[in-house]
Image (cartoon, rainbow, N blue to C red; front, top):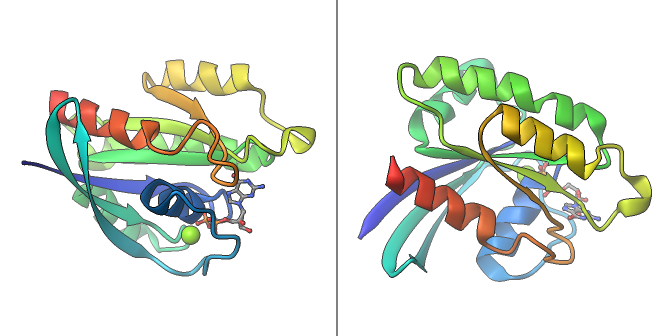
Length: 167
Ligand code: GDP
Ligand code: MG
């Protein structure tokens, strides 16, 4: 079976842990220790192939050296921002640049996720802006809610596996 290493990046508080836990357990956990960095193993059948994923949920407060280590480790990346936090959206492009630098000369395989789509009343980043950024970064884009499970239970992770396998 195929082995894929995925790492989840994004500013602290965007919902990285909530998304990973939702994907793995179909449940939402309200409070997850923000300082915790965890790796999970998960198997899924994607397009009739058994894929073994190793998923690294980064804490978002590691130093540069650790962060670059995580980037070197990963085959594919989920970059998450919070649609109610413009600053977290502005973090995305610099993260992609850093990934490119670390992965050079390889291409970076990533998907972009705008989380907390259930908080429409507090939205600061429009869906169109998310789509535009994803087009600039040439990656797939998802808006979802780890809270309600809307739009995000598995598709971003599965699509990332497909793209890593396609490379
Ligand atoms: P991380 O630091 O990126 O791992 O973020 P967490 O997963 O710890 O989530 C940070 C906070 O946002 C927690 O209070 C979560 O309950 C909340 N949260 C995460 N995802 C969602 C979501 O989709 N909707 C809402 N309303 N809250 C969320
Ligand atoms: Mg976390």
